[in-house]
Length: 535
Image (cartoon, rainbow, N blue to C red; front, side):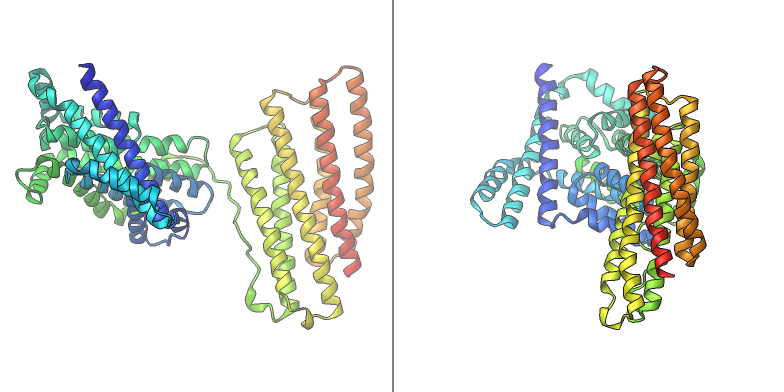
């Protein structure tokens, strides 16, 4: 019995290792551009299916593709509708492994390993080395298959095991649950298919018994995506939910028409080759499910949106106003740059507000949103800077040259406000993680200072957008009040620390908060002075 168990486990380990290494080699040979291919995905569902199938066939893991998709949705690089079509394609792509294994090339695995090893270590060319790695891994994969098949060979003599396997043909739901549990445990539907095919090579399972197990594999492979969506945005959770919903719908339908589905597989497969029939059943199921449900992508998206409640915080990446086509018209181009700078400032201001709110009501969702928003602000600074650099200097008047120069400073101030918002986010996260709450008195003081600082940011942005020098002057005057308030709060808080009215750790964070707020006001003041000087 131990030889059967360890033979099976060892075979599974080699199979997964070979499959993983083969995927790595294929990625290298393809230029490792899979993520960029997914990012460049169009909104056409059919293209999404083809891309998902292609990427999964190359990286040899539908789970890895789905996890990438969940990550892209979480980052705002892909919408829910796009993600569903890619996931459908991933289900088709993962059947490639089963089709390859069904060729039963186990007698050739030693030459594959030997030749692949020699190519990998002898060749100096990177591409050739990749193909050596692929061949070597291919041999390891079939070596694992041979070990699994050999380990299961004695089970043919156990009547109890044969009876147990036969029950899957009678009790279909049991087979589905076994398939789900196996895939959820080993985190690979391809490896689970390898075990099933190894059983078939020993005559231990029929097509009718195997189909429910295959359906369970498809549902079990969703577990990885579900785990990866924990703590992610609502949209990413919906993508994971779409994956399992799609697979469950397909499995339920086939369970009701299982005899007819089995007849279809037999019609399209060799009559005397159960191994090929099982591999074909996996492929036919996933292709048929995709063809039937692809026209209903929008319906599926609406369904999971209703199932997974919640509002999505979202900030658009990249510039909205910059247009390279008007670079030859500097006044218009500079006006667009001002609009983009104001938009960047408003994004930073919203981050500042959310970061301050986090001191009294911290949430992981808001924290993650703020981290992403900081990256958006940084990218916008670069985009606006590059746009201004493209302006032909020779076509600028003296006033426009000055405006262009000032905009470099303005966008830097906007980015610095975003940095201070991120500093405040980190301080709020520290308070939450270390359980360092502020007193109600301290929170009231911070709220009062934030209101003044926030007014300065609002007035500075409006003054920049409209050229209102009176508003700009108001910022300059208010900045003096903020400076004095920072000194007063610092002094009173140090007094509270001396009287042991608050903990030292919380006290240090409080002082950091008011320091960051004062610096935000400084940057608003810089913008106001630029407006006054320009107009």
